[in-house]
Length: 164
Image 1 (spheres, rainbow, N blue to C red):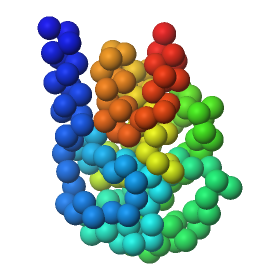
Image 2: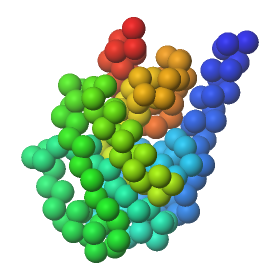
Image 3: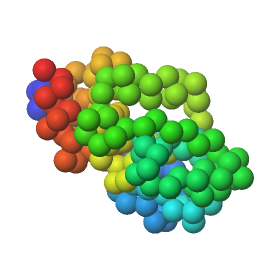
């Protein structure tokens, strides 16, 4: 029975509710829950599509120096999209503190559609999995399934080890 529940949750998370317009340049676009999109680095063209799709907040997990965010930030602001950076420097940045910070931001923005991104979506999914486990109280299997549905790939083992 537990296996069936996990499988159903994974299928629900993987399908996720879609936002309008799935034609993005960014890698690994996922919709893990209603109103939240995850993925890799958006392009300037993606910012226009995000605005058309009603995204109000971009949460960038890439630290300064990893990628020049200035053009994206300016384009987002001009399109009416708030751009917030939570620097998650590689695997070492997947921490409970960063998960709590992400949670605070998501609470602040409420129902506003948002994009949470890094370079590939891997850190975005991993941080959401840690948030699900430590902040939202999901069990380990649900949290890992949610993280994978949100784009977590190579960080899955690290996140699983954090949940012991």
